Image 1 (spheres, rainbow, N blue to C red):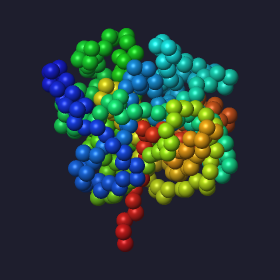
Image 2 (image 1 turned 30 degrees about the vertical axis):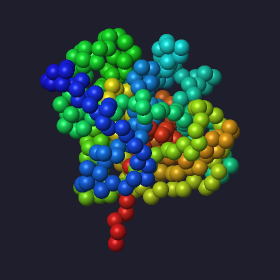
Image 3 (image 1 turned 90 degrees about the vertical axis):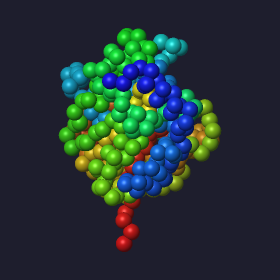
Image 4 (image 1 turned 180 degrees about the horizontal axis):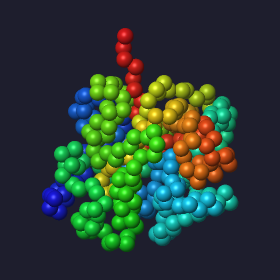
Length: 327
């Protein structure tokens, strides 16, 4: 195991030298990883996620997997926890009458039409407060295992029962949990390892592009009604990889790919305050393997297993889709 001083030197070096930049629409040749090393991706993680212990509701179709609960009367989410006035409040049950705004990202395929209005939550994060990526060799030198959690907490100076410790533990355990049926998952601790994972899905010499949600106006409004301005543009995606930021002291991406049919859309939205967003939405056409307690079914008021469940991606999450080969 690397000693603590060495780890700190690695992380501090990258905080100074590797500020991530926007790569929305960037086309990547999967066997040319050096192109990514110096450019990175904008806003891929946020310190607030660590200190608020707030988990991304989009990570897993089975986030309320029956492995964690057999009680259908409430949604025992993996860690839907938010910070209010410095207090950590765990949302151990989910009710339509008291809905956490951060789950207001779901819609159905039928909702993707011009003029449709709906409340949407788009978190905003600033790169200057976000954990940075480590280089692959640096990330690989640091243990990423729940078995090493006591030493990791000591290294990062987190108390065992602190929100940060709970967030780190949940991230590590989620990364170590087996994927659901017809899903491949991977937690990437560097951009290089994320691209390697994409290469296993798309093919060794494949080219692929990165799709992200883009905010066209500056605003502090996180939750409001949005209206679809134009016919959503479907992106050809015979395969896709979705990557989501997870709480950790340095940038970690939870990436997964499903064998079931999915559809990817670019959606032009206008907020009621004039905000403009070019959003990425993914629609899952087969939800038969999802837990009946999945939060999307309750948000949308639909029966478990209903096909065509969609969700918007926040700006710090992204989708990788293959680029067709030139004839």
